[in-house]
Length: 151
Image (cartoon, rainbow, N blue to C red; front, top):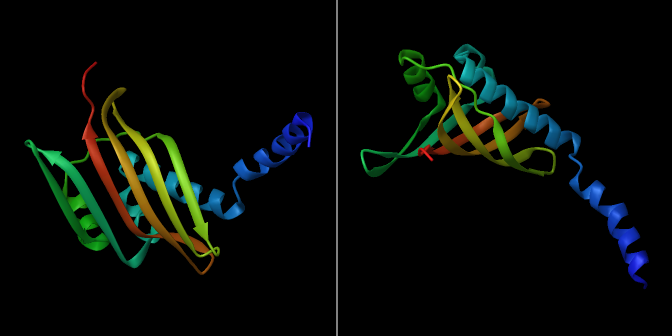
């Protein structure tokens, strides 16, 4: 096989390998809706995005020590509603979506937390979504937050 034939085969197959499936796009849309609702403080939009038994895991550095917590979505949601939250944007810088059999999705998203135009933190979000009655919902959401350091 000649180099030009190999190049033609690679050029023909790479775009299709990089194209998102409809399931991957639907999962991405669900992740984007979550991040926008969180950032805008629209917490009432969240319960319909999560399964009834969903949980949230958080890993972060606080006062020089790593802390971890896991709680039910309901407990996390009630605590979030009771807290004084800033409006922020969380643009996705890089995302990886894996869909299995059209019913389970695993997502890794690298994001930046921007408040008042200033980068405050970098997150890596991990989500497990399931399809329930043709709607993608979060079964698990976890993230690690690293405070942005000044340049």
